Picture 1 (cartoon, helix red, strand yellow):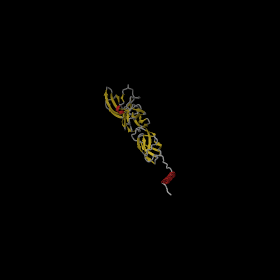
Picture 2 (cartoon, rainbow, N blue to C red):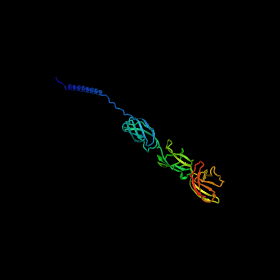
Picture 3 (cartoon, rainbow, N blue to C red):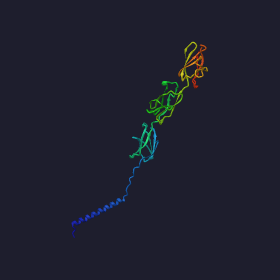
Picture 4 (cartoon, rainbow, N blue to C red):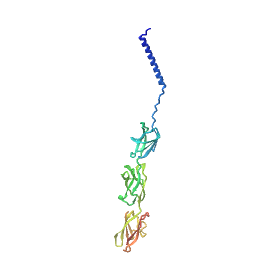
Amino acid sequence: MFVTTVQILTVLSCFFLVSSAAAAERLKRSKSDIAPVAIPAATPVTILSIIPAQAEPGARVILSGTGFGENATVFLGSIEIAVRISDAKLVEFTIPPHLEAGIYALYLKRSDGTIGRSYNFTVLPLRPVLKSLSPSQISFCASGKEREVMISGTNFGESTMTFFDGAALNSSLVSSESISFTVPPVPGGLHQVLVKNSPENSSASLALVIETRPEIGQVTVGSEYVNFYELIITGRNFSQNSSIYVDGIQIGGRGGQDASEREKLIYVDCSKMIYQRHPFSPVNKDFKLQIVNLGGEGSQVITVSAP
């Protein structure tokens, strides 16, 4: 029995077809036996709280939430800020010290590039701090340069305003640590000075004392006339209603001797008064002088040797 070439090729073709079909079936069964692998989605960055919700430059801010990872940075607008992460749930950062006041978009960017939702965060102007006033006490009748006061402190800027007894006052910014102003004409007593960097951002107040107690600086003999002479009294905080007490006797002011009588007190200004004295004898004698203002404030008692 002879096998032809055609028969051999036919047998081989059938063999290859059966083998290919079997291989395909085995591959199909092997694929169906493998379970699909789930690819986990990236954990989102979630901020649950921002404490505080607004703060000044240099302040510490804490974010709490989830999905922070082990490494991340915080952005305030376009400014990237390094952070400290605790347990992937707390983020702590410090507002840059020279960041301008305003509203910034705050968001967190994880090291894998995932960015969380942004929140509005207000950077407040730096709160000004008052340390001292120089001088902290001025005379009621001070004038010119004598009424200039220097404020010392920190965090002063171009927008800083000075307030005197609650009213805005013209002032000059000398530096970030000093401001100068001139005390307005106000009654004597205790007054309050503070500064503000914004309407809601003010310093504590400091006290400025306007001293009204009279003070005698010097007594000199002035012009001499036939039956009287002048004692010139210089000092400060004299008023038109001031009286002079000579050995306890009141002259001038309310309740003192009338101007028509012999002894007379003439008010020149708050730093000078003239006492017209009619002596009984040209011989010098010691007597005591004191200036007393209408409110009862009295100067020191001094002893004068004159006729």
